Length: 217
Image 1 (cartoon, helix red, strand yellow):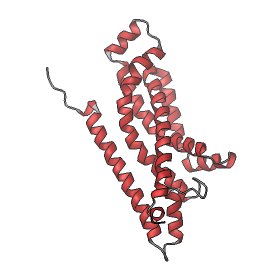
Image 2 (cartoon, helix red, strand yellow):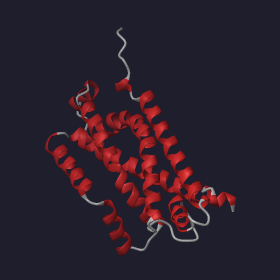
Image 3 (cartoon, rainbow, N blue to C red):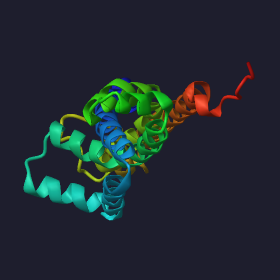
Image 4 (cartoon, rainbow, N blue to C red):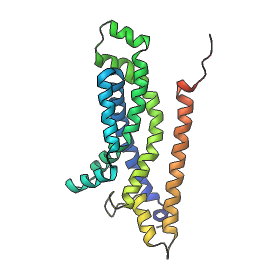
């Protein structure tokens, strides 16, 4: 009972959904951004305008529509959250891929007859992976927060399963008689979000070679 009130059980589900949806977002964002950045020209502009259109669509409206049209399931929840948090990641990947597009080793590969898919697979994606893994630590707290928000609104998992969001919703109803049922899940959620955010920031500062000073030979 104490573990449930502390948010442990809800944390398992929130962390699991957050991690899986973040991995899904990473795969989509990395692929989309790499293709757009390497393509350049009109193709890149069209793909980025597509991201602008997606960014303008209200996320909650899309989720409610999906849950109305389709039976609620874990897969649908993962797709909804992953389909929301990948957009900013794709923009970052596109910018880095556009820089790689003009690197000598990529240009040499193109001159030697490498196809677009080969350059993407051999040169662009492998060089984007370290940066993508760093941003995985940054989008993970965003995915956890989105899942908790949906759970608070009753749009996440069904009973008897519980996430931090559903525990927070229950805690609000019991605020007068049992305030700890709100404080414990909220405390665990905030602490987890801050921890992952600090981890992501630290990894970005450590691994992002663009931020490191260049040492003269």
